[in-house]
Structures are given as structure tokens and as C-alpha cells.
Length: 239
Image (cartoon, rainbow, N blue to C red; front, side, top):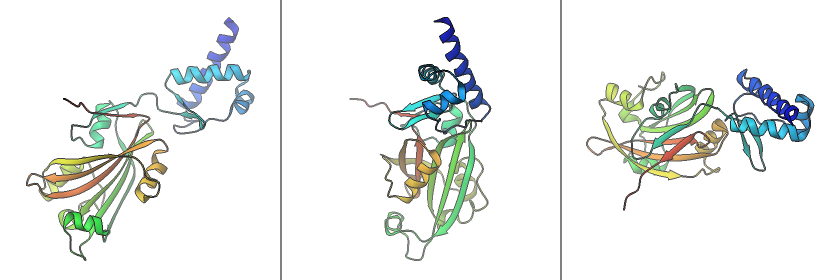
């Protein structure tokens, strides 16, 4: 009994080392039990116990019918929905440093729904900015922001530092005060939803937000996709 426990703990330590050394990176699907027994030694029952121990350590997650995946041990983001916070602030609140690993910007004509929402003329352009954020090497958020070009011009063309809200205030004298927010599931037929899923590689939830300035003018849309493996979104509802 003691020997068996020692064996699965040693096996779990081996798995932990592979994860810590990034040999098995965050998001990777582990090989099947048969391959793991050949790789690590021991029987299948020992492999199962080692995997269970790594799940308890917060290093692995088992998804029924899909497999076992490497996850980040130290990232758990808890954000109350009643507060209007930037994605970066939400990550920092968990004691982690957000890092942008994807950034793109384009100026284009809007579709009819966006044009009507912002009251744009048929030749007026929008600016579409997309960003992917990680924390502790794990993808945690993917955002698409849509601005009428008349509000932001080219201020984001060379990238962005800090919060969108601060950039709007500093460069365009726009003061965001509140947003109307919808919580939505993922639609695989929507291009941005597919982009988010490809980046996050995990279950996700979408916050679709329309942001207003101090005068009640509609300024921009944000589509924020959050990795629900590490992001807890909550709100308090009262009678």
C-alpha cells in the first residue's frame, strides 16, 4: 500500500515537472492512459491516481468525453459584473500581470446593424481592434472593440498602452461613464466568436457591452470573451 502511494506520487511529481518546465504547456491535451503508462511507467490505475492528484493540485482538468488538459494553477479571476472594470484590471486584481499576445487593428465599413446603432453615414468608417490576453501563460480573455472612426481616428493604429478608457480620455477627451451589458453564449457561426474560441481553447462566455460617455452618447462596442475555466463572473441580485 505504501509502495503504491509512493509510485503514484512520484508519477504526479513527474507530470508536475513537465508542466512547470513547459514541456507540457497550458492548454495541452494529455496523451491517453495507454501512452502515459508507457511514458511514465506503472499500470493504468497508478496513472489514474497520479492524474487525480494533479487535478487536486490544480494543474490538470478532466473534461468528460474530451480528455485531460493542462491548466494554470495560480490564475483564478473573480469579477463582479456590477462594476465596470477593464479586462486588464480584472487580471491584475487576481495578482497577475496581463500580457497582450495578439493585437490587430483595421479601418473598415460597418455592417448595417453597427451603422444604425451609432447613426453613421453610409461612407463613415469604423475602427475594429482585437486583442488576446494571457496571465501566467494561460489565455484568459479575447476582446473585439468597435469604434466609429470619427471618435478615435488613428490613436490605436500603433498599438495601445494601458486601458482603453484612459486612452479615450487622454487622446480624444472622451470620458466613459457606464455601459449596457448583455451576457451571451458563443455562436460558432459568428466570426469573432470563432476567433475567440481559437485563441482561448476553452469554454467561454461573452460580455457584449455598449459604452456611453458622460453625455449619454454611444461611443464604442466591446465584445469581451472570457475563459470560464479561470474566470468567475458574479453579480448580487436583490429582492
